[in-house]
View 1 (cartoon, rainbow, N blue to C red):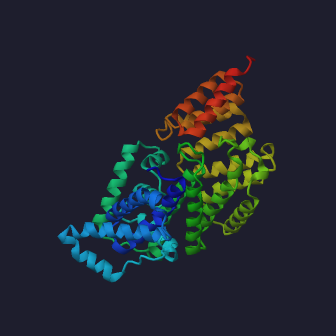
View 2: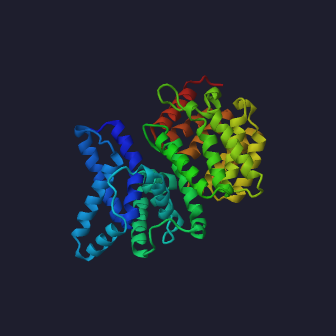
View 3: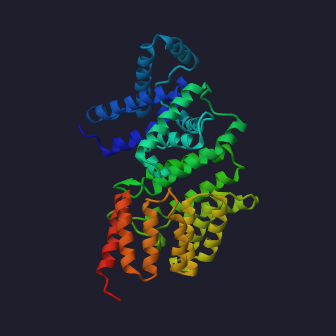
Length: 412
C-alpha cells in the first residue's frame, strides 16, 4: 500500500523529535536510531490503512521504545541498563510536544559530540536532525556517497565507545561545540532552500526547521554574534523563496525574480538582526554572508544591485574562509564589476580544487560568464556539462533550457 504525501511529511517532521526523545532516555544513539527507523517503517505501513493516530509523536515513541526494549531484552548484558534507564526516566507515551523542541535542540548539541571530528559531527547531525539522506549529505560535503556512509557509521561507533553522557552540555562545552552546530544548521538550511537531489527545487520542511532551530540556539546564546548572523542570513535568503519557482516549479534565477513576491517582513527582521550584531564590532563569516544577502534584498531591482559592495564583502569573506563556493561567488561579483573576462580569470583558480572539480556550479557559473562575454558556443557547452552533473531535476531542466536557448540563437 502506498503512503500519502501527508504521512511522508508528518514522519519526516516527527523523526528528529522522536529520535531525540528516545536517545535522551536510553543514551545510545545507534540503537535508538535503529529503533526509531523501525517505528517509522511501522507507521508508514500501518497509518495509510488504519489512519493517523491522534498523537503521532507519542505513537512513534511508544513503538520505538518497545522495539528498543525488545533489543535490550535479547541481550543479557544490557538488561541492567534497561532497568536503570526506565527507573531514571519512565517513558511518557502521551503528548511529547512539550518536550519536542528541547529534545531536538538537545539532539543537535549531542550529535556535535566531543568524540567526533567536526566533519563527522556535522554529517551525523544532518542525518539525525535534518533528516537528509546519505546521498544529500555527500553532495553537501562534495564527497562520494560511499565515503559519507562510512563516515556516518564510524561516527555512531565513536559515540558509543566514548562513554561521554548524552545530555545538554554546560556553557563551556556548548561554546566548544557551537561552530559545528552552526555549520550543521547552515547546511540543513541550504539543502532546504536549494535541494541538491530530486524533483523539487526547495524543501520547505528543512529550511523551516533550520530557521526554527537557529532561533532556539539564539535563545540559548542571545549574545553570540555569529548565531544572530546565521539567523539573519537564513531570513534574508529565505525571504526570496516565493519568487524562486514558477507555476510549474521551474527555477527562476535571481535576476529575473519578481521582487514584489519577496517576504518583506523576513527581510526587515534579518536586516535588524544584522544591524544589531554588526554594531557589537566582532564580525564572522555568517554575518558577512548575511550582509551580502542584505545588499541583494535591499536593491529595488537586479540592475540596482550594489555589486562593488558585494565584491568587497566577498573579498573579506574569502580571506576568512577556505571555501571554494566563496571564491566561485566572488568570481561572479568580479564579473559584474570588472567584466566577464575578469570573472573567468578568477574561476581558473578553482580548476585544480578537488572539492569543485566535478561540481555543476563551476560549469554553470562559467557558462553564465561566457554568455556575458558573447561566447555562446562555450556557454552552451558548459550549460550542458552542468546539467549532466547536477542531481537536482529543476536545475537540470533550467540548465538544459539555457543551452537550448543559446543553440537556437542566430549567429552573430
